[in-house]
Amino acid sequence: MAKSKYEYVKKFERNDSLLPNTWLVIRVDGRGFHKFSDKHGFVKPNDQKALELMNKCAENVMNDFRDIVLAYGQSDEYSFVLKKECSLYDRRETKIVSTIVSLFTSNYVFNWNKYFPDKELLYPPSFDGRVVQYPDDNNLRDYLSWRQTDCHINNLYNTCFWALVHSGKTETEAENVLRV
Ligand SMILES: Nc1nc2c(ncn2[C@@H]2O[C@H](COP(=O)(O)OP(=O)(O)O)[C@@H](O)[C@H]2O)c(=O)[nH]1
Ligand SMILES: [Mg+2]
Image 1 (cartoon, helix red, strand yellow):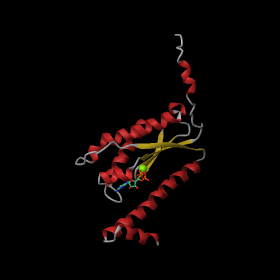
Image 2 (cartoon, protein in one colour):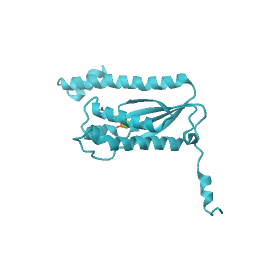
Image 3 (cartoon, helix red, strand yellow):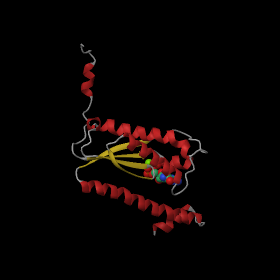
Image 4 (cartoon, rainbow, N blue to C red):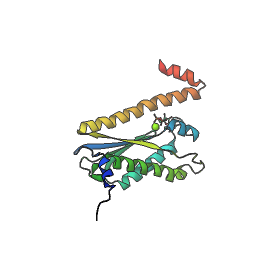
């Protein structure tokens, strides 16, 4: 079939293939979840149901994308690890990231009622996504340690902060106690 005169526009498309033989880590993160968790009355510091919903989304993403070998989540974020030899979408970055983020987000909305039967979803949540490539197994291990450490630091701080507030301190007083 003859090509149309418009075919040339494809030449403007950018090649965004990810490096071969590298671990691919896709991290999705809730956009504006400070406000989202407030508006939906999430328990502080950790809302069990909200975390279970995040886990459900990740489980469904893993079941769909079989190249994902490991996932780790905390708070409003989830990291997905794809095999070094993964050839999903010819390793095209935008295709991989956008489909994983969109599947995660649609699952969040789709499953909301199962985890919060008495809570109306007040507005559509969204997540951003990025990919990082790690050539070495140790880099990947350090990436996961970094996210795990972040989780521990935040949880330690938030648990102490809310315990102080619940014991009668104002939020400013609690902040000052923990700053020392
Ligand atoms: N109350 C509550 N808030 C949470 C929970 N998980 C995440 N959040 C909120 O979501 C935010 C996530 O951090 P970050 O991504 O940096 O903030 P964002 O830019 O507003 O999405 C946290 O700072 C909390 O305010 C939870 O289980 N309970
Ligand atoms: Mg966020």
